[in-house]
Image (cartoon, rainbow over all chains, first blue to last red; front, side, top):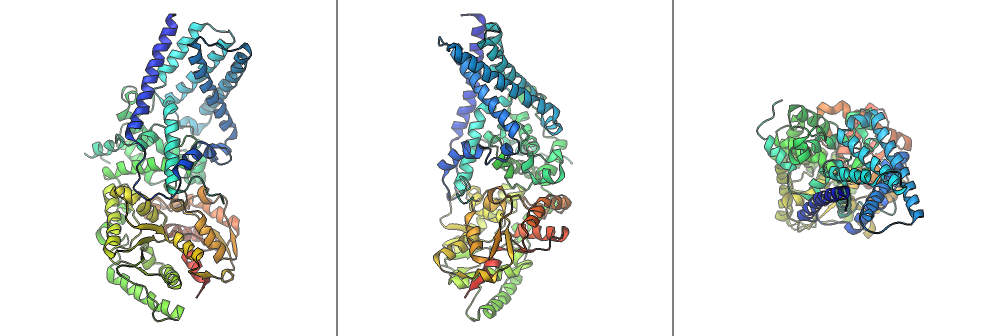
Length: 207
Length: 427
């Protein structure tokens, strides 16, 4: 096995251990506890939290910012795709050529979306004032890795570059805001539980 | 401003082993898309009012003391010391520019409970003795006298006695009563102290509804205050004490249901937060007067003639009652039966804008100008409906709307739900 693959495997192990630490820490804290009398349906609300509440039909941060919302969706699809590609690269499974080019196309689109989000963060004053170095570094790393993955799939880049880039990204994930890879799901769960307990979510059908 | 010895206590709040707290402290990605959900940002355009900035104030302190990156490379993740500058900014933004309405929370792209984190930040400030003195004095009055306006018991009884006489005249029945301190009743009813102090007609209205429904009910002179401003100040011990008093009165009088008066934060703090403050479930039912009136209508215990309320009515949904309390259909069902011409605001219900009076803002006079400015959105919403009457089941909202009415010359009447229902009652 090549040295760069070993390095990326080491980075993957560190990243996984860190993410698992965060995950199991939350599991250890247990399910939300509420002593008040339940009014609604928490299960339905958690489902709604991950579905309807995220849709641009209901979420103001989505329907008021459709270009950003769309770019964000593409960007995250691309991010999950890079993870899948990376894990499959470590196995003997190889994609059909057609699929490789489709993936590369999606990744180029998502990386362009990520670049757009980065430019927005730099250009829009209110976002710039809100940001810290971690915001820029996280975006640049993820976006670059999407480009690099697309180039790898189309044979435009050395494997060593790909695996080193993967290792750097994997090592950075636990450091900054990319940890929301774990916390996003927990946050949507918590929010769904909160609103569900009180009967606010899912919203009344008359709404 | 000096950071006192309680800094460690304040910081210990952030390291609590609480899953909800840890999740929300770690989830914000600073996308800034919450800006348009905030009435303070929308009405002023000031970047510092963006909800993510408020989250960041709390979570940046968390990162500084609770994460390896924050300890080793604070500049990378904007981890901040809990120093004088940070505390001053926290006081100004967390108390002075947030009503904890939760609109940003519901629309957060990630799902961060922003208003909860603001409350956590306020709890930290409370530990350090940094609650604005105006807000603290309201809490102090409640702790000292049993109600946030410091109304003496004999003054309350005087008010209730003349209201009872008025009720008897109004319904033409000398047995109509406003019962006080009765045991073994169905309902213990609570009041917002603003009612006996400034708006006694809302007590009359509810008493008339109870009379029409033939209800067995009482008020307690020992503890009738539905409000809990310690929920807003962030002082958990004081919030617990206020909730405990109301719970204990329920047990003492052996009432079956505690009915919370028209007060958004009051109903939230006793019904939803109270059991958690006290770490035990109530053994009695707790509902809002909105749910009770709706129940009376559905059960046929009261009848309304909506032709008696002919003017156009719109509804302001209190954030704590609707978004954070799940009460959405009941007030609409009531208004459909109580008024001839009901029109919704836009947006309404779960998405309604806060009036600007929540979060303890009405008690904090130092932020009064900001509060009135934040209310501009509500003014536009109301004007767009063309309504003559604005109904809201919350006395805090009533106060803020009355001030907005005066400042922005809306020429509308502000009423509680019970008042509108009482006007349409068929006896």
